[in-house]
Image 1 (cartoon, helix red, strand yellow):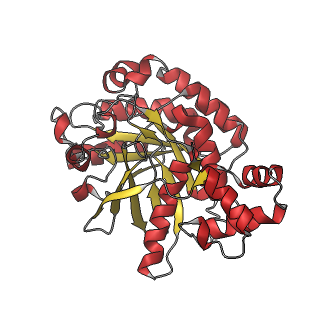
Image 2 (cartoon, rainbow, N blue to C red):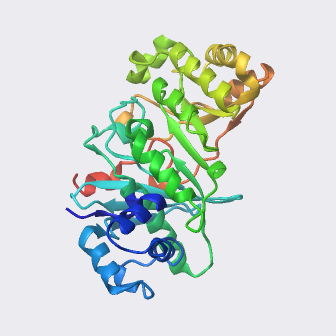
Image 3 (cartoon, rainbow, N blue to C red):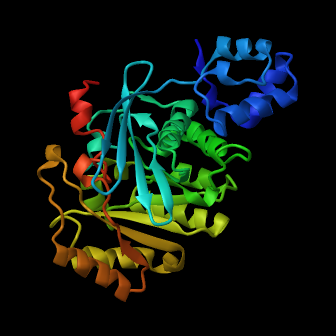
Length: 353
C-alpha cells in the first residue's frame, strides 16, 4: 500500500531515493517542492526527472487528508475537520496570537487516557496517526494560509489535539524533526510544545532527545485521590511518579515545564487545592509555570461546570503568593468547540465515525 510521503524525514527521503538509483540532490529538490512550494501532486515538481516522479507516485501519496468542514470563530480561530483515508476523522485548530499563528495538531484517532472532563476522549482510541498524517495537518493549514494570499505562515505548533502524544511517541518525534528541519517549514523547536497527561517513562525518554521542544504536563489535580477521580491515567502513573519524571527532565534539560491545570467548579478549584499545588511545585517553582485553564463547556459532561470567576482569581492569587509562576489562559475558539478539551464534539457526531 502507498504511504504518505510526509512520513519521511529528510534523511529517510534521501536514503530511500539513493537506494533506488536516484541522485542525492533529487531529495533536496523533492523536499523543496513539498515544504517550500507546497505542491499537492508529484506532477507539479517541474525540475524532477520523470523516473523519479514515477517512483514517488508508485510508492507514496502526497495528499491523504480530505477537508470535510472548516469553521471559523469570532476570534479568528479556525477548526478543520479532516477525513483520513480509512474513513476516520480528526480535528486540527489554527489559532491567532500576538506572537504568531499556532496550530494544535491531533496525534491519534480517539484517546484512551479517559480524562472525565474532556470531549476528545469520548471515543476510545482506534489507532495512532502516522507521522505523515500529523505532518499533513500542518501542510493543510499552511496551504489554507497560502490561498489567502497574505503571506502568513504557521510559526508555532502545540501537540495538544485529540490523543496522547506520548502514546504515539515515535511518530510524534519524527513529526517534530520534519517540521523543524532546515530548508522546509523550519518551525523553531522552541516554538513547538508537546503535552502529556503524565506518561512518566516517556517524559524521561523525552528528556534524552536533546531537543529544544517545550514540554507541558496536564496535572489538573494536586493529590492522587482527586486526580484519579478525574484522570484514570493517575492509576498507572501517580503524581509522585510524574513529579519524579519531571525532576529527571529538569535535570537533563534545564528547560521549563508548563503545568496545565483545568479549573472545574467545586471540584479542584478551592484554595486548599491551590495550596497543595504550590507545595507540590515548591522545589521546582523556578522551572515550572502553571497554566490555569477555565473549563470549556462540553454537553456530554454536564456534571462539570466552569469555575466561578472569584474561585479562579483566588486560585491564581494563592499560587502567586506562594511564589508559583502562573497565568490564566486566554480562551480561543470556544464558540466553535475548538477550545481546550472540546475537540471531537458536535461536528464529529454529525459526520459519524
